[in-house]
Structure formats: structure tokens, C-alpha cells
Image 1 (cartoon, rainbow, N blue to C red):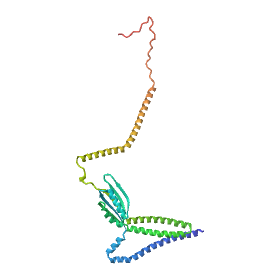
Image 2: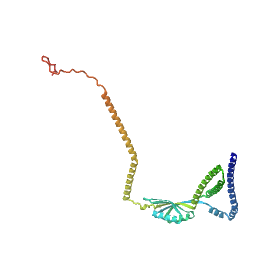
Image 3: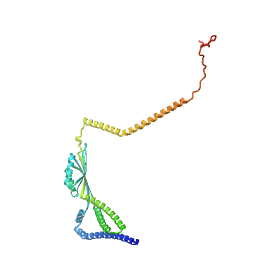
Length: 316
């Protein structure tokens, strides 16, 4: 095959891809124009129906993600938690997360997902579980976001379908590689957008409610007073002090051990250095020559001879 024919075929494949893209854009624009032209009579009808009908129609077509928080106080935290779980199950919802803490102040936290249509009813039912001390609701309009994702998914689906048709009819290796690369990219992007759209639709269909259940706070009259109360507070403070001391000691113990090791090593080094210095000084002293002293005459070993006079002694 000549290079000229190969270049013509590559040019033809590129032209086909460009034409398919233009056709897809034309279909999208024509679909938009058709929807706008079809919606014109409906818009006129809504205009003649009055602003109330237009407001109701816009409210019904909105896509909203609703989240809420409810704080409940009760004397029976485990029982209240079981009641909340039963209410969620009765509404065909689910519990995504739960946690419970013990001690002097028992509490439980739940993250529930309930159908958005039953959100208000579910909040009302929670008031029967215990004393509701706080309620917060947040609604976010995601209509434009959902519409944009759905439009991009539809466009990519049409593009993938067109590329698959081109792939089945391509004969040149270069064309096949180019189409397969583009098809892989479009398919990956399509899967990502589909996942985002599914998550968004699930968030619209099911509202998220965070529920915090805590025990009732003790009233001032229930707190002990007098000598026993002071004794209890003093003992508690003493135990807290001991606990704080041992905590601080345990925190500082590794550092103290390391400091003791370094201190012992330094002491041994200093001691060895002093011993070596003393040993060197002793060796130097032994190696010095001793200066000669005065010569002392040696006295005769035997007694003096006869006729000899003894040396004069000291005068007494």
C-alpha cells in the first residue's frame, strides 16, 4: 500500500470522527431546541395559571438534598437508641453509623438514612423517644447539578455508541488504535459520571439525620452537700492528683531512663580518664632518675687496735 493511500485513509478516519462529533452536537442542540419548543405552550399555560401554579410546579421539579440533626435527652439511653433504630427500620431506612459511650454520662450517636418523603414525619416521631433539645435541618438544591450530570452522561453514552460503530468498521491499524484510545477515555469518563449521578440521586432520595442521645443532666437538688460531699470531693481530688502524678511519671519515665543511661556512661568515661591520668603520672614518676647523694665513709668493721685511741665522743 502506498504512503499516499495510507494518508488518505487516515484523513478519512479523522474526518469521520469529526463528523460524528458534529452530528452528536447537532443532536444535542436539536434535542434542546425541541424541548424548548415543546415547553413553550406549557410555559404559556403556567403564565395564565398565575404565579401560585408556577411556584408549585417549580417546587415539584426541584431536586433537594436534605440533612438534619436531632439532640435527645432521656433517662434510658440504650432504650432510646433501640426505639430510634426501630423507627428507622419502620420507615424503610438504614443506620449508616452508630456509637455509644459509657461512664457517668451515657450517650449514643446514630447516623440514619430515611426516605426524603418521610423526613418530617420521622422528625416528629423522634419527639416520642425523649426530650428533643435541638433540631437542625439543611436543604440544598441540586437540580442544576443533577441536570448537568444527566446531560453529560447522555452525551457520553451517544459518543461511546458511535465510537463502537466506527471501531467495528475500521480496517487500518492506526485507525483502530486511535478509536480504541478515544473509546477507552470516553468509557472511563462515562463510568465516573454515572457513579457521581448515582450517589447524587441516592442523596436526594434518602435524607441523612444525625441523632445524638444523651442522659438527663442531674438537677442541682440531686447533688450531695455537707461534710460527706466535701469528703467525697476531697477523696476524688486526691485520687485525681495521684492519677495525674503517676501519669506524669509514666510520661517522663522513658526520658529519665535515657538520661540515667547517658549519665552512667559519662561517669564511667570520666572515671576511666582519671584512672588513666593517675597511671600515666605514676609511670612518669618511676621513670625519673634519682640524684646521687653525699658519699658517707664506711666505719671499720672490727674493734680498734691496741694503742689506738678511740675517737672522741660527744661531750656530755
